[in-house]
Length: 404
Image (cartoon, rainbow, N blue to C red; front, top):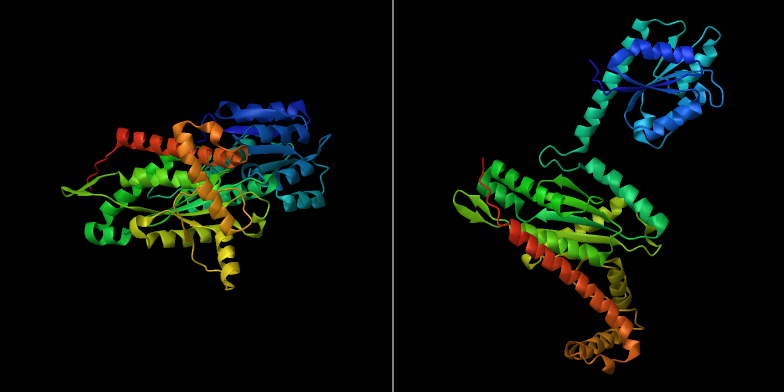
């Protein structure tokens, strides 16, 4: 039996037909009325809870066939999949009904109709629609961690990439893995390993912003998509996640266990050149960076940097290495004419650091200030995030978890 919140849209230019259907549906449903296809289309877009549509074929402004076509061609999955029952009359030909069926009508109901006709279809299709929605929700989430599934990762990632391309914005992808997951499984068993994975999943989900998405890829591996996030900021996010997870303490049979987190990073910098690759290819880059992180001491955060690889290729006159770049948090300077000039710029910055600390600001040449401002702004942003992360972990950690 449908719940009291099941909502149905009735689209018909006849007040009598609308009132009759609403009366037959009774208090089991919430009904909405539209006098033509155009008004019905607006209601569908505004109300995400409409789970069934009764629609007349013949109406002014926008007829039922045109409304049905707009519904089935909608970019919104909710609208495109809503069941639509077409209301037909004596004058409707077989050809018209066939054409409507080909567009995607769920069912037909002919005039005159009775209460049983309306109720039986309403119950059947609203229940079916709910079951489909529940299955889709289950498919969208990982059963172990409760995080989004790989399917949702790809969908969200492609939309993020598309938005970044259209607006020339940045985006970043993190691949995160609990180091030595297999060793944990071998030494401590499945339940303990799954408990650790679930705990790390909670930390990742709670540490990211609402507009960011994290999914469970497999085993101890996760992926996160960070919209409108440049590589530098993504590195700060990765640092915070790594510190938070590595401060966790797990009590395994009275033995304290710490885990290490490896992170691979890939960024789309928003300079109008990133449209060459699909989201899945950026995921491959992030996975390569993660593999490199797993091989470094203390699982240092690794960034896949195509610009660096091209420079290596040009300098050595060889094919670009497929290995990612292992980076510490390095503040990038303005573009220089050469690597030598860039090094000179770094040395100049270092020379004036003492002046800044001593408060001798007037001794710093004006032409140096833009570079110093960028460097210091990046450093302050990094420092604030690290301080906030440390404060957070001191408040909430260590966490002690005992296996079931």
